[in-house]
Amino acid sequence: MKSSVYKFKTEETLTVFEFISEGPKGKITKIVKFNPTTIPGFYNLTVGDKNLLTNGINDKAISDNGDTDRVLATIISAIYAFTTSKKEAWVYAIANTKSRARFYRMGINKYFSGIQKDFDLFGFYGGGWEKFRKEADYIAFALKRK
Image 1 (cartoon, rainbow, N blue to C red):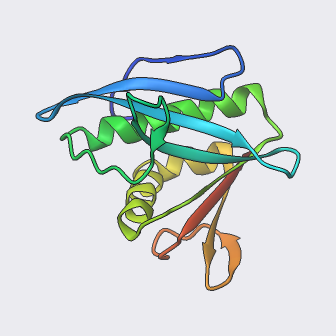
Image 2 (image 1 turned 135 degrees about the vertical axis):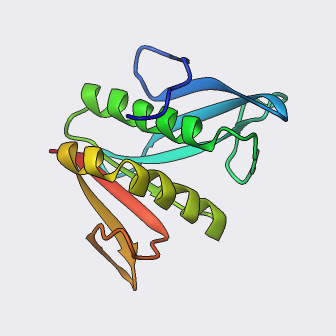
């Protein structure tokens, strides 16, 4: 990974990762969470700002804290850690906004050469899943360790 990664803390199951984004807007606590689904072995990836009142995740927040590359690198690092402990897991993320889809695509494209060596990567486009193409306008993404 080319960008530096924020130090994060996690728990023993490696399903919740927390780190602090630092930039012009101050320190913003971020959460990366792998939520189990009703389908065994499938996990929904949720990323967002920590709501300090509820300890929940605001996955619609756009922090714009000037550290996008470092945040993306940290999210990818969390995915590597999670899938190292759960090699058979499928991880997927559904973008809840166009800007969030762009954010995910930007991260995947930036680190694509490394990601494709370690993961099978798919995008949801036109009503179905397909092998990831850098130029496609996906609304959801899925990956699994090779």
